[in-house]
Amino acid sequence: MISGRRFRIVYHARLKSHLRAIDRRHHSLIREAIESQLTFEPDVETRNRKPLRDPLVFGGAWEIRFGPGNQFRVFYDIHRSALEVNILAIGQKRGNRLFIAGEEI
Image (cartoon, rainbow, N blue to C red; front, side, top):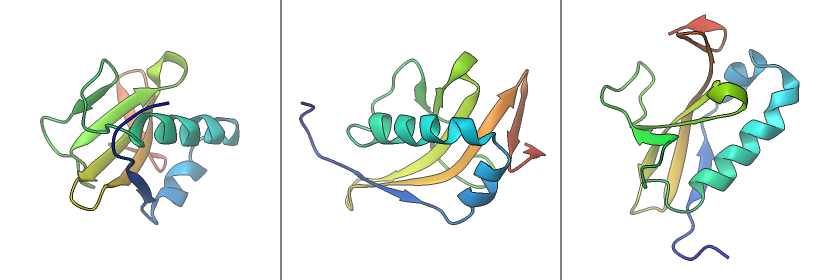
C-alpha cells in the first residue's frame, strides 16, 4: 500500500474532445496511468513525470509520459492545499509532433 496523502483527480470538460482524437482502445490505458501515477505524490519528479519549463497554451505545470513508445502525454496542475490534481490536456506524440484534440501543438 502506498502511504501519503491521496489527491483527487479532476478532469477538465475539454478532455472529451482530446480523447475523441485518440483511438478508443487506449482510453483505459490513459485512465489507469492517470490514476496510478497522480493519485499519490503527483509532484515527485520521475523519469516520465516532470515539471514543464514553459507552460503550454492550455496551461499545466506538469507532464507525464506513458504508453507504447511513451506516445501519450497528460498535462496537469497540482493544487496541494485542496489535494487536487487538475488534468488539463491529453495528447499523443507522433514523431516529434504533439497532437491534442487532433490539432498539432
